[in-house]
Image 1 (tube, rainbow, N blue to C red):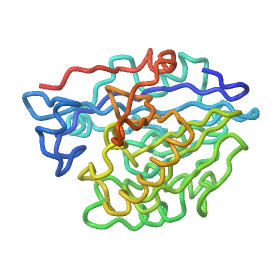
Image 2 (cartoon, helix red, strand yellow):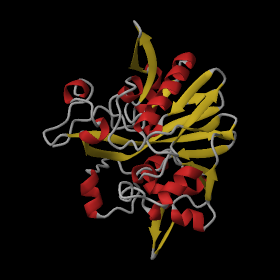
Image 3 (cartoon, one colour):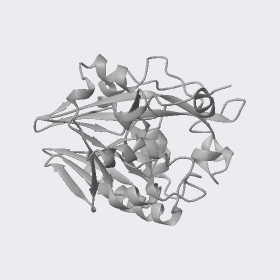
Image 4 (cartoon, one colour):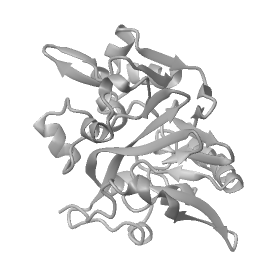
Length: 296
């Protein structure tokens, strides 16, 4: 889809099925099941949506999903389904080869957002996108490189360490312009160094939200947090800021894991903030596995 001379597309690395206690944390089931009802095994789908951006002659990929370095146990743990293939298949369907990617932006370094950064080649782990510069916040890199007991299972060195070794990893120091249409903005809360991606062309504004809000409903409900958020109170403060921005700009919000409302707009109705789907975004979500049935 084009916004003047900015081109964006959504590509998918598959769907995982997670226990609802992860994405909804302390939110009572009676509240969240009106938005997304768990299956008999209490799991709900989370799409691994990534974004392909073409701006000023640069081809940018935002996040890379789980990738292909997974064991059979990993696949079972994630409940991963790839009925249409993974990220590389989705890119190929759009005529994009790994060598065509100039820049990869990782919102953060949890495995389901950066696992596709690298792949196995013989006995080595190498960059999946051999020409690309990979961008991540400095604080995120530091915390991923020194995980604690809680984060050790999702900060997996093979997903990012080889990129630092071979000189492809660029660590960002705060908000950073990639092009005049694409800007990384620090949105702490889910992790200390989490970043979202601000998109703009003319009067149009968009935000690739990442895990600031895993589902659209998380963006509207300030206090709805996931069990995965490392800094919950900071995430609330971050959402408040970007809620105001979204309302002021009528922005398109790209929700990375949401199978119900992948592209949304925040509106205010009788003083209450709600999300509604962006009907004009249908070409972007047509190939995504939306409206999924619960697992089990």
